Length: 299
Length: 265
Image (cartoon, each protein chain N blue to C red):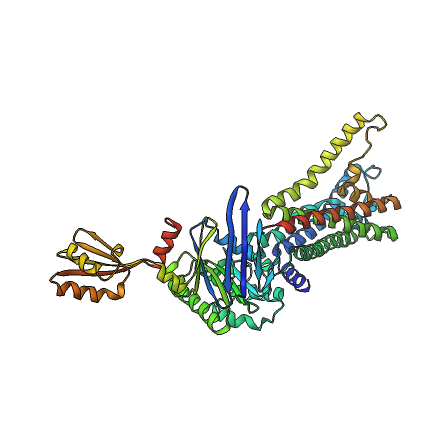
């Protein structure tokens, strides 16, 4: 399998603290990879190592098929932590300065400013920008030189709901139309779930799991709850159709794990056997609930 | 490398600290010459015609030109603009946009050093020029022009570059302008004092030395700048200063490069 980015047993230690612990990550071309984890889980450190901003204590990183050794690649755009911008320059001057550095034509500046919604900032210095505007400018810089891989650390920090949607739409458009691969970390799991194709769950420096978006949906537990007049008899009836371990009783409520698509059939069975069903609830664990469960606690 | 240099120079030309320090340096030199004129006039008027105080005729544009670098004003100005210029990339996080795009730390350090040295030369030359022009207008150009003057001035600029590279090293080491600037200002002030103390101690410990002998002081940038700005300077003094300044520049460059290579941002 060809990966656009791959880490092999990557480890980072700060003194006695193990920030990243033998992480094997695999990002395919065209992925929108959501890196999720609690504060201090090691997401930013991992991203900084991918970009050669800090050095791994051990392990290897492969980018575009080649091992990177203290030096990243021009094909990678990024926004890590606070956006790196010159506060005494305007948005245009900031992009122009980085165009000079990246050796590209300044003709790309206006379209990019329009994409991120900063086309009307004129002579306003970046130091006077709001947090959201600075974030947009940081994203604009990451888009320069047509990167094939963009690494974004909490990209929607400080953005209003409209701004969050703009950035999400931009990421999806660049991914679908230009095949740009994204690695995005965020605390907003609901927001991530609207665009991510693959998840990496990191906890205490360890990559707990890598899974596709569909898998993530399926991993959450699903169950239905019948409130009935006779839960014991109801359980006996349904036990003839599904494994008994999927059934539990609590008071007048009957819990059935999974089998959500058979809820109508179970309901009919109970009614036909004279058991009144006063309510039926279907419950699914969200990606966030699953994340909380595997990382074991609050964020 | 070409892109990095273009990038750094673009920032230098737009750097407020650089232009403010340069303007302040020029003003300081102009004021210094005017002050010399004023104090000499007052002293002469107080001493009368037969007074032993140096007269206006002992000053000239060339004399001020020769002594500008040894004055020490530039050292403080360098510490301010160099540390602010280099530390800005660290404090504003813009260095992430450079390193994450595949530019090596070594090339980044070299391009920053070249840019800063150019800025330092501009500042130093403009300070010298302002002192020369003001001095020439007030006291006359003077007739001490010879080939030694050119060598002295070139070596003085080399000495100033050694200070610049000290500040570059401190900026890369600390990455915070406050600490780097403080040390950049304090070290050139305090090191000569410590060196003098060591020399005094050495004369007590080593019987072959006499009071007033300079051992450690001889290896300082400041004392060598003073020596080569003197009219009595010899070819040996020039050669020694040239070697010493080059060694300092190389030393600070290598140290800065080693630190930059390991720097995590």
